[in-house]
Structures are given as structure tokens and as C-alpha cells.
Length: 237
Image (cartoon, rainbow, N blue to C red):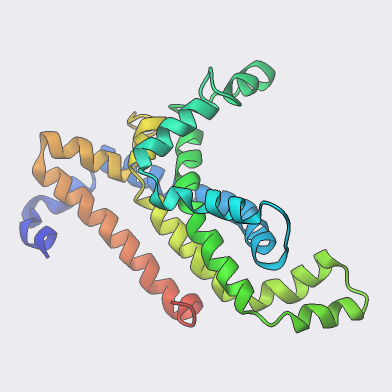
């Protein structure tokens, strides 16, 4: 309500068409979507492993997966720098072998957002898997289906609402990510400046601009969540 009350409605159309606003919004939508895709590729198999298998160290892996939920985002950004920076554990090898540098790039934004958002996907999908009836998979196995076939044709359709809910939560978290992004990727307009970073910068210079940016971010988030809720996640959330 405070944003709606203080919004500069008279100058809103002009401010919404400013290049900086459109660039930040476009970059936010792109990076949040890519981070969600990365989280789906990595997170769904990880959720299946945590929910359906037993092995030494599973509790440790589960704890590591949930660490970004309680870790201050800025600390997460520092950790990413220590791992993927030019002198980091993996960053040194990526730079020497492939010439890939992640910090302060658009790809770095995607990595930072995936780091903080993927736990939402993993936890949601793992919960859906634990709630799904494993007898369907067992029946598929008795009919000759391999583990991958059973997962693709039986398990995944069963937990599709959970996957959709996790993806929505992951996307929304990635869209609003700030701390890890500014620490690991910086705040460069057109390259790493997402909407939350643009709000932070505008807040120091122009309060009305910060309010407008906040309204755009709020409108996009609410629109997507409302549009997807009835179709995909009404049975989960």
C-alpha cells in the first residue's frame, strides 16, 4: 500500500519508458528464467536422489542444499567469488582451460540467482516425490521399464504440479535476488544490473524512480504467480 500511495502516478508513463528501466526489466526476466532452467536441470534429479535413495552422506547433502535458505545472500556472493573468481577453486581452472570468467558478467548473475533460488525448487520437488505413491514406479519396473523410463513416464507426470510450484517459487526468488548478485556480478547497467539492483541505485538518487521500479517488479511477480497458481500450483500451495 505504501508503494501505491507514494507512487508518482503523473510521471509514471514517462518513467516506465526510460531505457534504464526497460533494460533492467529485460535483464531480470532473462536471468531469472535462465536461473530457473538451470535449477530445473540440476535440482529435479537432486530432489529425486534425496527423496528416493538412501546412501551415506545424504543428510549432509540435504543440509548443503538448504544452506542458501539461511545464509545471508552477501555471504553467498562472497562464497561464489571464492569458488568461481579468477583465483577461485574452479574459476582459475575455467579461465585457464576455457577462458570463461563468471564474476561481473550476465552469466554470473544467472549463477548467483540459481545458487539462492534452487533450494526452493529442490525442497518442493522432494516433498512432492515423498508424497507420490511409489507403487506406480514399482509396477512400471515389473513391466520392464528401466529407472530412467519409469522416472520420465511415471514419476515425473505424478509430481508435475510439485515441479511447477517449485519452478514458480524458484523464478520468483531469482527475480528478487539482490545480495549475492551485487557481490558476485556487480551492478553494471545493461550487463548485470537487474531490477532489485536498479531499485537500490535509484533509492540513493531519486526516490520516485525507486518507487516506480519497485512497482514494476511487484507487478511482474504478482502477475506471474497469480496466472500460474490456478493452472499449476493450486493443489500444492
